[in-house]
Image (cartoon, rainbow, N blue to C red; front, side):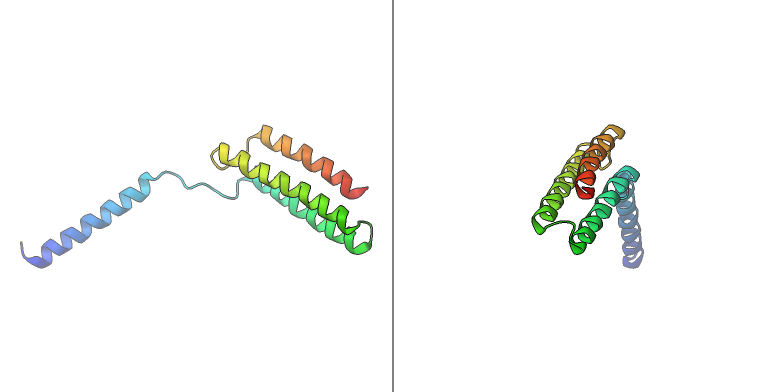
Length: 110
């Protein structure tokens, strides 16, 4: 074989090997898992509520900081739960997080 044919075969082999390696890596983790999405969307909504109530004078800066700290704790727990379950939340995880969000939501409203 001449050099150009050897180079072409080597390039083709490298291309096939790299695509086979990428395919064998398995499915890519989806950051937008529906249960994670729901929990995080709710945390974002609660943050907007805190901001609005702070602007309206219904919350003090200290109260707002405490509420946001609670939400950060919930978010950290959500990340840890997802890390333990392959990047997603189980239904039980979601129930636990929603219960925590309910408590903080009532505090925002009071």
